[in-house]
Image (cartoon, rainbow, N blue to C red; front, side, top):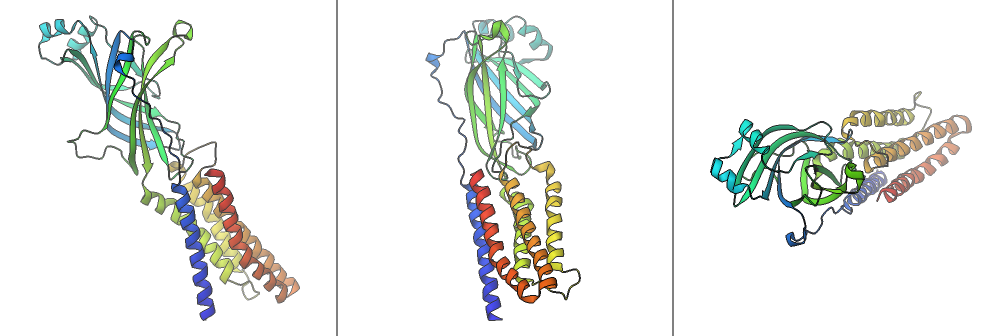
Length: 362
């Protein structure tokens, strides 16, 4: 009895160690750095330098299986113009909107843009224009459904880049350039969760870059402002939905193989039946998580865990079938020798397979 308890303790410690190693490797990641140095204003040669602020009111419906998300965004564009004096003479301190705004925009130059990674045209809630500190300030709030790459090779760990590409089309970079001023997640005095679901903001970046267009033979560059909101998946959600179920399947498979001997006393031999039940549980679990897993062309961390569990359960089921057959046809001694082999080889296979998969991913 003491020997059995000692063996059980060693087995449990082995499995806990395996879990901790796998878990720690999942955090040993190198984050993609999208940051870029701000260009000095004096180094930018353009007719209109457009100072840009972006604020996210809401980020929701993050779908990594389809590669898109929805966002409610506020954009403030400010630029210097000689016609600001004319605006003040006509409207004073008034913030114009609606028909008055639409009519006045025909009289001046202003930065026009589209969201290049939007799946459908953005829905504009409202737009305003005023003058502050000698600059026009064009404000717009819009909703958009945005496509993303959904690159998360270490899912459910790692960062997901929720990016927003705003492209200018009212002039090339000689005419106008976006200048990134600030990016914010929610108003400081608004007490609600901006990013919906089991996601947390890791970092934010706002950058400008020039990209070519098909206009004018494709030689001219147009200014783009790109907002990056890097989010990470909530740990507790990943633990309860993915890690705990998969490690439980592997643990029970190894436990059954180690402590449940084959024999003729059970007509169905639940050492085999139990492994078969676990084998069928794996695709059922993956199917239930299909809407939350990224659809990728590469092997990610979650895929590796499912493959690992499948290999371990399949190996243990094969050992159980062979052991049962040998014991029924060649006697107990042959069956016991296979069981001794299984007790040693099964944990080794589990370690070897997870080691190969993790080394491939990390």
